[in-house]
Image (cartoon, rainbow, N blue to C red; front, side, top):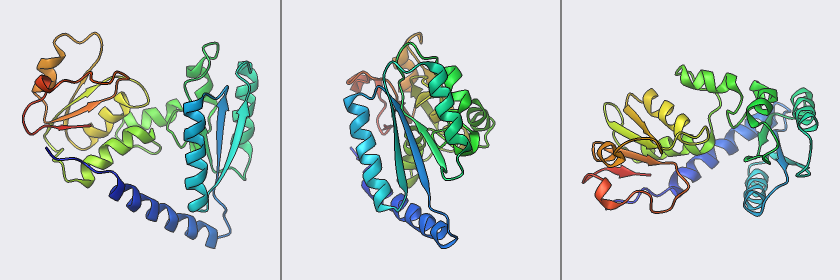
Length: 225
């Protein structure tokens, strides 16, 4: 069994980001990311702390915009629009999932596409689906970049993506298509998922169920993330 280690790729990407940040600073531009949270939970809070720490190492300011869990939709929309109009803010990240009373599909419409670092706005999604990605959900992008970094063959490969979320499953499928893989998306309504996964040389599991993919569902030599 071969493990795909992520640390070497992460270091490479950090160095690239550090160089880009320095280039912007040389032009008098101070990169600034606004992270918007609504009723933040412990897991999201940990993620936010790590994000701020990485930003500091890369000379990227991270502004935390914390809203109460009972914030009305119109206030969240107004906050996103204000950040979109603020010339000091270069990127906007909305932490999800949002509280159940909020319509995420409507709210992401109000993230300015030019600052939509997580690729949530329908404009960003459309470009990705059209094979012209600009901003892409980071987890999905990390999956494909890790495969490419380790030289896993993608062109012509049969790839199965389990899960169809807008955060991992669908964007990962679009990115794999861009790499000329033959992609199948499996989900809870898929009949005989085992037959689909056994036919794949690359399997991406994007479901929140540990142990969902068992050994008898994987062909010898397949790469699983």
